[in-house]
Length: 256
Image (cartoon, rainbow, N blue to C red; front, side, top):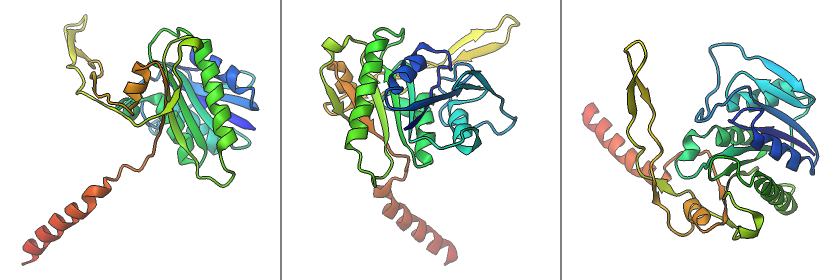
């Protein structure tokens, strides 16, 4: 089995090294990841300059671009054979609710999924890498269960996993969840540069708003690992009909 690993914290981050070690149980692992931290890069592809790739050690490649760049390059020419699985992480910090729209960790998994490959993103809830080995062990167990239960003709899946920073003995299970919702992000932080120009820091993510039972927020608050199946189809199917109706009515009035 061939496994491609990426992240958004950079190729040298402790999380990706722990994940790569855990995934070697299942087969041959190749790491293709950003040279530097790319947190919050979302699904961005670099289109305005060429990208450089360096093999810094056997099976470990760095890309001077985004997480999506890294996976995209790997799947479109860098690797001799396509992987059977793409995994991303382990991220230093949670990716729940609306975080999934901005996360480079999730974006790396999405890129694999767009190529028809099963893809899983892993994140720890808190920063600091506490209990990272335990998180890697849980990631290994989730991948093992996934591979055991996947039918050979099944459609590719995209999973987003959030793991509490706790020892294994304190983890209260692994549960399937839906995305929760956050309040609006906090205000930007305005400062002044040494040259007197105004500069801005993006404010912190909003606190959980929809954290009810069944959500990713609820799971981790109850010391469980959250596994959320994701999809990339952003269509609001419930609104298609109503939008079509007011479009048709407006066009008819214009023609009349």
